[in-house]
Image 1 (cartoon, helix red, strand yellow):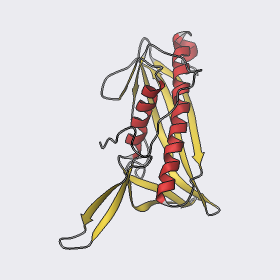
Image 2: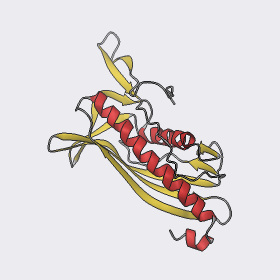
Image 3: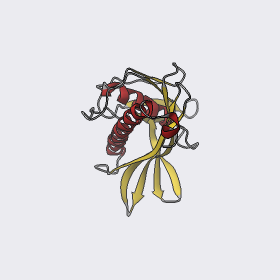
Image 4: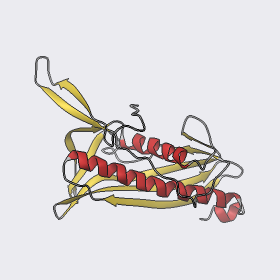
Length: 213
């Protein structure tokens, strides 16, 4: 997995030269990693439990490094000559881990496989693409999140769908990538606050009540 410094420019750019055949023409591919840092909300609770975050499930096109664009509602394509640094689910998972760390409100957070926390955050990545409406692009990120308790009797704590739309400053790939960063940062902040509140609430309520949320 490619990791860029947290204080790198908003869109990190690497040019890769690849040959289609020996002696053939080289094609440059730009690799992007949007900045997704968040600011903690003073209203968020501080918690003493640990959280494990799984990589989101999604469909085949988003489960890749290709940057998706939907020019019409029924057509899903990708930007030519541009790639994400990781697959979209891996980017979302890493950004969520860093968002919880940046919040300063949780004892420990890790990706699934690196340990088992008191709670698990699992999700489906329903949209991570640029959509054109009336010739104007907008970046859409939509995540269906589920918070599950691992300690005690376990079970579902809460589930919620999060969606963020950001209009890029232009149709070129650079402002589009910047809009992805803004959208992902916004949706991550919403998920962090929601998970912290719901996790704390589940620990103070009877198991049968919290499981029904």
